Length: 185
Image (cartoon, rainbow, N blue to C red; front, side, top):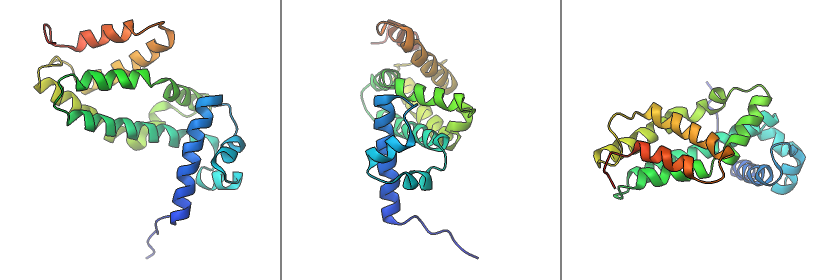
């Protein structure tokens, strides 16, 4: 019986460098940027990129998973905050920072990868973190009790899409107002 050894430290560093570079390159040049551009930005050979991410789809999916993992960590951090506005601060920050995630998801969809499939590795973690944040906000009396985690996920997705078409934060403000307990500050 053989057990899989964890990747060497240098391989882990290279993977992290590639992901960080890909995030920068795709943010600056869009997802049409090549893996060669990512390799140059990471300071590694293109073979190193393909060793960690055999296809561009794999690289894009890893970026989405990384981003959603950070969002889950942010949700847990906000859930631990004593500030009653923590839920709304988190929600607004996610929506305002959604452009890159949406572009990555669109690029994957164009390559035939369904968004649900792309986020599967982190979906449970993210849902759990959002549920904890929501529960905390509801216990504080900040968010309506008839809102469920599925509603929050749908509203985050909708508000993120609305941001593409809105000139300002008005749609976001309307959604946040709808989540608040009436007469709550």
